[in-house]
Length: 324
Ligand SMILES: NC(=O)c1ccc[n+]([C@@H]2O[C@H](COP(=O)([O-])OP(=O)(O)OC[C@H]3O[C@@H](n4cnc5c(N)ncnc54)[C@H](OP(=O)(O)O)[C@@H]3O)[C@@H](O)[C@H]2O)c1
View 1: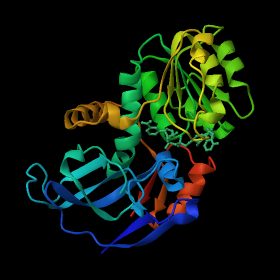
View 2 (view 1 turned 180 degrees about the vertical axis):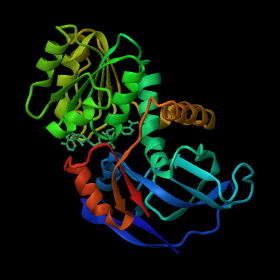
View 3 (view 1 turned 90 degrees about the horizontal axis):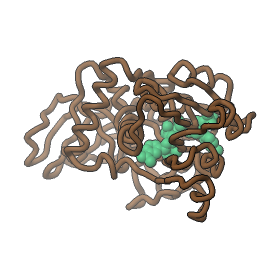
């Protein structure tokens, strides 16, 4: 018997139910893990509310975690009990123990803690593909990152700065502004108080940005388009304030022949080879000091409702984890 957080019907944080669950012996190709740290992500709230549809009901929330292998199923030869492993995977994460396909796991370098790994596998890999694949950020690029003091935001600002970009971030409070500035932002805009489009124009002396990374969605659209230079790239990768409403492609023309994309992690880091290569690049960035991964908030798994309330009320900064 183990403990999980399940959703039996979609809704507010109150639908998160901490309860017992059986974990069967791992099936063919599966590994059983004792989880030591579990990532809290905004996507967990989308599944909980039903914005993203879970394939089964009830379902266990959670998409990234780290832990130790305790058993392997038939056919698994590359993992053994005691291995330190981590993953991002579609649901099932809020659990003290679970089974998972072995090909979704990566082994952790000794220097990476379980708590860091529970932040790196979904948030870190997302930042990896956003900055290296969706757009290859490098010296001379001016980029705008919304929610710069969030879980994704703080990692993105650090890594973009290390890649040589000029980084502008938006944040919801003065405390978050300080945090973003000490994590790679060259300029921070308090978008709750200031017109972020006007400030980007001012900061860039009218030259605007090469790319805008927007995980906020509804509240920052269409302002994000106005922050882009001609032929710039709008990367809409999340819906923290609600989804971007449908819009006419002519908007892209009107704002200067813009490009727009709505990417997701699984389309960039979906195959085993992509996972191994991306995790290697990510862990190297941590090991060589380009990326610092502090844990800002740690919750007991039984306090999942509180964790979701904190995240959705913008009370968290940086990365949050659960300790099962
Ligand atoms: N597409 C992908 O592959 C992918 C993968 C992972 C994550 N994501 C997306 O990345 C974004 C960030 O995820 P995260 O887990 O790191 O969360 P987070 O940034 O730690 O939390 C969300 C932040 O969004 C900002 N925000 C602005 N308006 C908001 C509103 N109305 N309600 C709530 N928050 C609001 C808040 O920061 P301020 O107070 O500073 O405004 C809040 O702290 C999410 O949209 C998530 O879905 C996408």
